[in-house]
Image 1 (tube, rainbow, N blue to C red):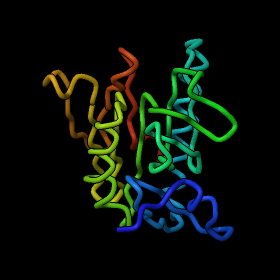
Image 2: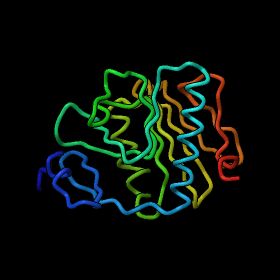
Image 3: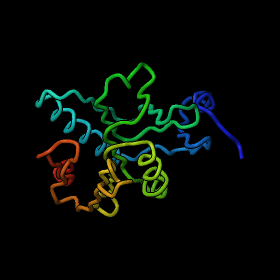
Length: 180
C-alpha cells in the first residue's frame, strides 16, 4: 500500500484535483453546473447569515484546502467549509477541523461522501456535516459533536423542508429556495 503525503497532492499537474485520506489519493472530477450553483448559493447564504449576525465564523467554498489531522496524510477539499476558530486558518487553508462541512453529491463522489468522508469527518471532530444530494433531492445532516457518547443527531430532509443548522440555533436553510 502506497503512503502518499500532501506533497504528492501539490505535485499533481495543473488542473488535476485530488483528495488525500490516510495516505491514499482519491482523484476528483470537475463538478457540473448544478453542483456549482448549489455551492455558490450556499456560500452566499451562509456568509450573509454570519455577517448579519456579527459571527466569528468564516465560510470557504471549494477548492479550499483542509488538513484534517495533525499529519501529512490527510487533505480534503469540502464543497463548503465553515471555520469558527480563526487560529486554524493560514495561507494554505484550514489546519484542523472545520465546524461545519457541506458536500454536494455527484455521481462520482456518492460513495466517498456518504461513507468514507462521513467516517473521516466524525473521527476528526467536525461538529456538523451535511450531504446534499441533488439527484435524490435529499439532505442528510449529521450533528457529530458528542456522537461517540450518543449525544449526536442525524436528520434527513427534502429540498422543500427547512433544515435546521446545528451550529446556529434558530436558523435553517431550505435548499429548494436556493435553486429558484
